[in-house]
Image (cartoon, rainbow, N blue to C red; front, side, top):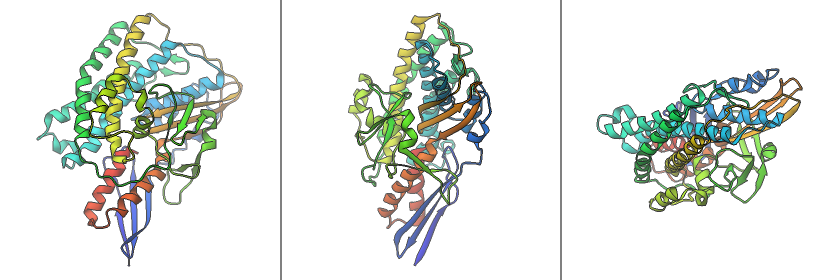
Length: 413
């Protein structure tokens, strides 16, 4: 006997999606995860555009993680033209990323994921009984937003982020205010880690086939080299040689594999890989958790997000001090276009992001390739859903639907 379970609209996720689960003779037969990425044709839109226009265009791929798309595209542009920015510009970009992650992770943890574990349909419904928990989410999100507005020019799609640096830079007083805010939220982030560590996470999946993140001697979100969990290292120029994209008949998001296997990206992959590279204060907090890292439990991605917030807030405090000590500094270097191809890789909040552009001698784009986290997550989420369903065959439809949505939300696809 054949039976289907459909989740036609996934709620509390950053994008749009649906799930079709097919059973035959009371056994799982097929799972189709359908991520809806509208036909925006960003790679096509960038053709013949001047290099200065591209970051503005591609940042519209995502309103929440626009900083990642903007910085990945700028990195590729600077790579193509051989432009080198100053250490201060690099630090300012890293501080901007701190803001992006605080805002995005706070949004996901408190407003998308938390209601699942607190037994409420939404954060709004939870606010009456847990007002201080909800206020903490707003506080963390607000600090991230303020950093993005200060450095990027606006909270969303800030135009101050340019190839070569920034049109303007914060004052010493503004940087000091950022540092003060980051100090103030450290206890709130630690409380967030404790909260998500306190939940009971069912174990349902086996070891990941592979995981991927940017390589480095420290916890890093931008770089030129990447690492797989099997020990393979490769450069950003080799990205398309390892990450293979295919189209799907049932999803408008592409379907990606590495070495023919689904692979994990995102906060759990990053914390698993960089566990020994975390700051001592972060390591101390992690050592006291019930959640054990490295972990193969996808639901632990929420704890990993909270740990990343602490690591990045601590980094932000260090960065602001270095920038204050370097004041005054130039915020922009000259970028001279030339014919060539450039590559940009960045860890977006949801996972590794890849931008590649080829330019003519005038700096107009000839071709582009953008590989988003959503396209890379589809295969591994489908694998996890299969593991979950196999271990939940005794659950009724309502419970199975709830478990499936919780799992998908943990990825924040």
